[in-house]
Length: 171
Image (tube, rainbow, N blue to C red):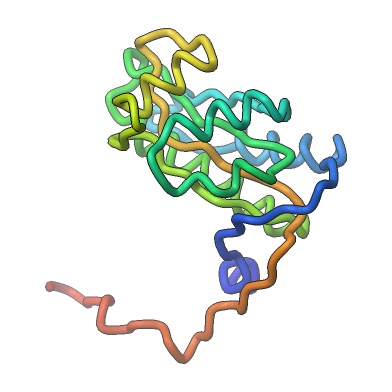
């Protein structure tokens, strides 16, 4: 697990290569196995591999969407806000597990934050809801771009971890 965490980096440039169904199935299994508060499971996942839709999603946020230009797949992580008052935490856990499974499978990913972000035309969440036909009661946490890496990034170095962030007993 620590090796996966060290090597996982945000990838924003992908090869033009489809992701095999077996790998997508494993990614979805990781998503569906994610724990949720009181096991309410309010989180849902929308897979998009249509280039035209991916480019429409890119317009839903003012910046930080570069990965959508080349990603062969995006998973939009949404949740029923009426079904859980901690949907943000539940969706964050599921998103993280997706990214870890993606890394384990030799693929790359990038978290594109949508909640509390803006597009040129207004609220990013509302823009994504419009593109994907989501009900108003669904919150949109993130768009995860996924694909075969077309850039290399150095793994994190343990010696550079900031242990001053760790406190024992009290702050």
